[in-house]
Image 1 (cartoon, rainbow over the protein chains, first blue to last red):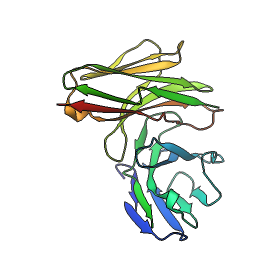
Image 2: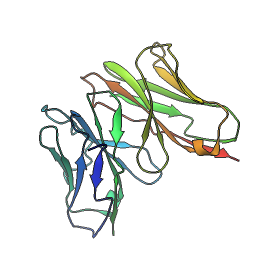
Image 3: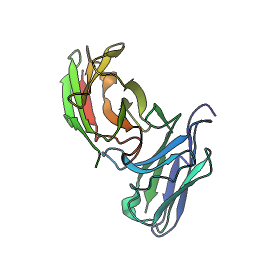
Image 4: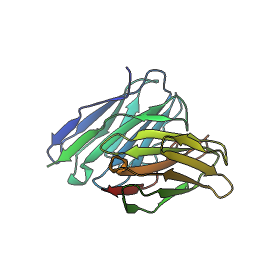
Length: 113
Length: 113
């Protein structure tokens, strides 16, 4: 596609439920990032995929968070047993290669009630 | 551990003023420094700097990198209310660091009419 696409754009879920967020990167982009942004806060790095290398999961806040990416295509971020503190905008970005210009999706606004 | 510090964290000025935003970094295997503007959800790309001392310019915005001082500045001249946003910087590394793109907390810039 022309840009990075994320779905859903908004998600309201009940505490304790699992959610799955999807990111479609720009075709051909080998690098893919997930960030979390709480209200009024900066971008918090979650996970980074680079080609077929093992992902950098150092930013995942707990074992309730996981992400997958098949090759250089779609990525999904899964949050299990959601908590109210998980409420945030989850942003995905992709770039042609590491440390080059990253393009962001419009994000998924997750609200846990 | 890689670090990115932006200053000031927030800034309120009047339309027409000139502002200078700062970004300092400590990154293993530095490769590039990226600046983004975030108004609503998705940050939009402004500049990518790889060489020290070479100013990049786009309209009223300009940016320069100082690799010796491990810092970069973003200048906005003749500010307008549309410049109100969060400005984010991110140093990119070429491998060996914690991740490919670590963002600072941002500078929240407010331009008053």
